[in-house]
Image (cartoon, rainbow, N blue to C red):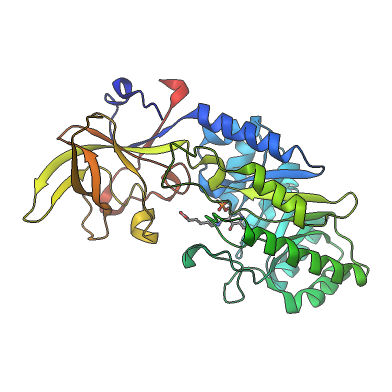
Length: 384
Ligand code: LLP
């Protein structure tokens, strides 16, 4: 990525920098690849990044949105997403959040339990409305990813277990203020191989066969998100392999006549376009190591501390050939406030700018104010 360092160096650090050209190329690729197949619709998983400008660009590209809180539904309505492109998931929706969705006439509630089904029915009845719903099914498919971001196994809190599905559907069909339109699945995040999506497709085929034999036909199958990105080579792979991702579903998932296939992609849409930019405060010589102490910390980008995730780090002020090995650490009073050990960087000095790459998803949105720190700002390529 070509960082406009001359402009960035005058901005108060730390901040997130978003390359909107790359975001647009990513969105265009999604539209091109999903557009090859009849009935494929992509919703953006807002939880990855809910900045207005990002949401707006995504909306203009024609994607829908997948929300997991009333706040996200509001954010999407505020930037002009049409109600019939908003889906609302989440294991614990509060009454006010359900009412918000009902008032806005959103497309669908993804329901995760019988008590939730009953509350949605009650609240819809009070408004004289019929809420469209899909059941989130826990398919017990292993996503082969970090255990913190695996969601589709029986041991997880998400979704309705397959054994209960028939009963739950029967219950829903008896209620007057909900209309069952689909099934929803999501097996995990940062999935870098395609075979878990093949397994998911095959599981969905079995479920559909079973339901069809009971006379239940559904309009929508939603396979969630989870397509991973290349954290190791953001330069080589700035855009995920959407071609093979959609082709996998096309090959293995038997959509019924007129049925729609929905996707909820978060990370794959926004991750590579964002970097956290931080300034080097000090270079400290330890007894066995050299430390680069930067002004960004785990409050700005928590993924390394929370998931042992690694973001490539680059000295964007100095691209010299002379390389040194450093531990790159933040200023927060926690030992886990460390971005990387034994990082190979061009010789680094006080005042240099470092870019932590692949931080557009689950970066800025997960920032917090621990140590009374300020939240990082957003800087957009089109505004420089
Ligand atoms: N749909 C549902 C129901 C989800 O739970 C998620 C993510 C998505 C879609 C979008 O998944 P994606 O396409 O972004 O993989 N904070 C973690 C990731 C948590 C993902 C939670 N669910 C991280 O920083 O890696």
